[in-house]
Image (cartoon, rainbow, N blue to C red; front, side):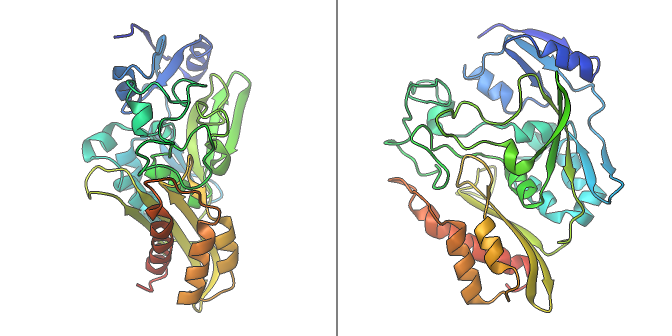
Length: 328
């Protein structure tokens, strides 16, 4: 196996200084990084252990929002009373991901940084993978691409982002607070993950050496009128073929506001802005829901084995909105 050095960060500034060395990776729960290391896909020179930094708290913000520390485990975040009460959409998404054992180890920050589960990326015997080896090609294009993207892909990569949590965060308009050599900044969740373009090996907009500090959630008007629907091949420990995070603010049956985000269909959580715009000011009628669902996948580009995702995503959008609105 590839040798590496290990150092425990004493504080946030120390962690960021250590990350200046080429080939450095931060490690929290390690549930994704260690798998990729064992496969030879990740080859860190230095692992910086951030588990002892004060980044695990979940606290209420002055505006009524919530700050979830990057080192909070998925289990802790899902079960926190304020998350369950104010952001049940996030609780549902977190509990639908992985197994209990993994959720007990995986951190919120690490969840955001998960890499794709594309067969051709995670198996190094396939040499053509632009995400793993830039410029080598994309074996999934002409290979078995059943789980791959139908939206936002490029000729360089058709992989999908695997996180359930990130889809819910996208619907909740979360902000990612980070710190690096240039100081602290905040990144909107919609801008945090990248579409592949011609550089699919770059997953996020994090700058070199930046450390995730927290996920900040604004006050939510949606409350319990929200639903996370995950469609997968088996009910236990499987990634989404299609998922939908739907949240509604209704008044007398009319949509005042709405959020729709899809997972399993793109290289990042996919926000259905046009579908949301159509629904605002409308009743949740069957006709309007069908129109919104069609807009949610407008421009879809399916491949040989994943054309079923187009219709599946539309049905999932309708179903998730019906369940969120209490119409199912």
